[in-house]
Every structure is written in structure tokens, then in C-alpha cells.
Length: 321
Ligand code: UDP
Image 1: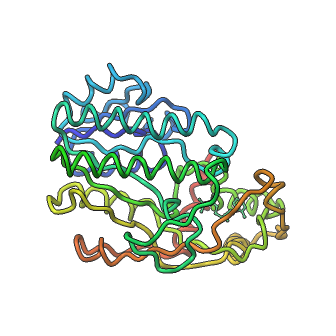
Image 2: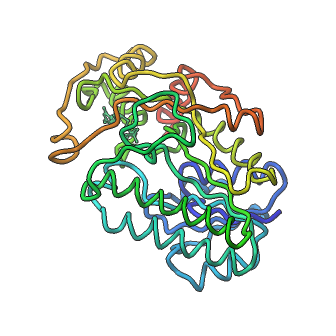
């Protein structure tokens, strides 16, 4: 197969490229290198099964050409990271809505299967757990960047779903919960690479809010393995699947775990949300996925626990120049 990965030089996209190439497929990575990095795919340079195209998903002509010559698409290109979304709301909306619209339109033009990556932000402030795919969304005002991001991703899901329903275009939707691992940048707010860098540099660990909010972290290698299995399942089309871990930890607990694993001298400090992000910022108190649907279809079970994940991120960050 020849896959087009939008966002193919990003954190998740580059791991997906590695996985597909190791399985004998060809990969074209389309990335505008805004948050993606050449460094993430540098090791693939010279591999006859890999090509990097530097460009944006908003370039219809380019997306048309690349879609025509691939066999299926993994659409990962998006504005991600809470800090990025809060600081660049307009750019985030355009990339996430218009970009996905272009991808789906071209996929329909050449009848190519598309896997669309959505997010657990879809559930908004619904703190029930574990969250099932058909659970209600609880959102704040659309004038708050976080909720407009959630709405933009919901529009992507709706588009993918109606292309399937009305036009028979094979589309699969996944909602990624907190995904972590080597190559994840700390620049856009993601908590784990931040904490690891702070701990290794003996800096204060910046816990936002009370630190009692909780998350579940999944290793990126478990995510890409699920993505490659899902795209091969005909009965995944027209469906949405959560992908995440169920090992829940508070953010304060995560900071302490990172300190312990790295034997760091860092101290935990607490920063109010309005200082960390913006006035009136709302966080999710809890986010745990129900993963029975994806488990039933492809036997999905996370293979790396949180300690293993943290050690992997520590080794990656230690190894960076
Ligand atoms: N967070 C934190 N300190 C940081 C960065 C993030 O306490 O330096 C918190 C953030 O407020 C959130 C959690 O860690 O409650 C997870 O943040 P991330 O941006 O990684 O993911 P998301 O908010 O999308 O779950």
C-alpha cells in the first residue's frame, strides 16, 4: 500500500510512518513543518519507500495530486496542543476545519479511504469515566478557544461521517486521548515532556491548577499500532473509536512520579490556570476513555505502562543534543 500521512513529520505521524515502512508499505508524508519537524523523519531520508512533501493541507492542488497517487490516507495534520490553540485560535480553526474539508473532498474525488484523527477534547467537560464514544459532549462558550477547538474537531467528525453515510466514502474516525512518547515536543504545553525536561534540569515542576485533575497517558507506539490495524478493518468505516490508556493519574501525581523516576531535586510548584493559559481558562477535571469498542474490533490493549512510558521519554530527552 502507498499511504499518504498528513502531518507525517509530526510526533504521531512520524511514528506511524516508521511503522508502515517497517511493514513494507510506501509512505508520503505531507507536512508544513509548523509543529512537525524534519528531525522526526530525518532517519527515513534516502529510504525508497518514503518521501516528505513540505506543504500545507490547505493547498488544494497539492492535496489533489498526492491523493490521486496514494491508496489510502491517514489524516493527522492539525493544530494541536492547548497552548497553541489558546495563542493562535484563528489559525487552529482554519487548519482544522478547512484542512479536513479539503482532505475529505479529494479523498471523495479519487475514492480513497481516510482515517481521521479526532480528539478526546470532543467530550469537553464531561468528567464521567470511562467515556464511551456515544457519551454526551459538555462544552463551554464557543468564544473560549478550548471549546472552539473541540467544536472544530467535531465538525471534522461530522464531515467524515456524512461522507460515509451519504457518499459511501470509506472513513474511520478515532479520538486520541493523551498520547505521549519520544519526539513529542514540550513547546505547545504537553505536560509529560515538560515535566521530564524540568526534572532533568532540576527546575521547578510547573503543575497548573490544583494538580488534582487527572489524565491517562498512552504510548505513541500503541497508538500507531491501533491506527494501522483499524484502517484495514472494513467494518471500522462510519465508526468512531476511542484510543487511550485507562491508567489514570493526577497531574500532581505525575509530577511526583517523574521526580522519583529521574531522582530529581526539582520541587513541585502550583501555577493558577489564568497565569498558565489565559483569563477564564477551563480545564478538564478528568479524562478516562472506555476502550471496549476498539478492543472488541482489533483486540486493542495498551502494552506499555506509565512507568515504562516515562522511562522512554526520559531516555529520549537525555539523548537529545
Ligand atoms: N499541565 C501542567 N503543567 C504543564 C503543562 C500542562 O500542569 O506544564 C496540565 C494541564 O493543565 C492539564 C494536564 O497537565 O491539566 C494535561 O495537559 P496537556 O496539555 O498535556 O494535555 P490536555 O490538557 O490536552 O489533556
